[in-house]
Image (cartoon, rainbow, N blue to C red):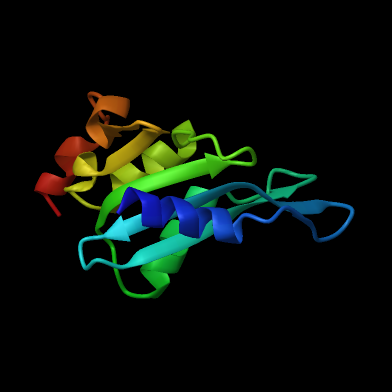
Length: 133
């Protein structure tokens, strides 16, 4: 499954200049949901702080389609190198649902290496909030 996700992310990553202020494709993400669907997103970099990370973009596509549970996630940079999500994206992932800590995140493609989100966000500050939800 990682290979399919990686290839799909590479396909959409084409770097494009949209305007003098907006560029896309510095990163691309693919997420696999518990229903077996893959959602994609590319980064949208702007001259201000209003840009969008590829992870946020992929998650937005997933939520728009009515899903909320991610099983696997990967992010690639322009050179095809794997990257873990930034701190803001890690926080957003943890807020999705009580099972988010079990999201498997790709850390290396060759050979395949992964880490669970809970290892990237130990002692998450709002974990107990899901007990009341």
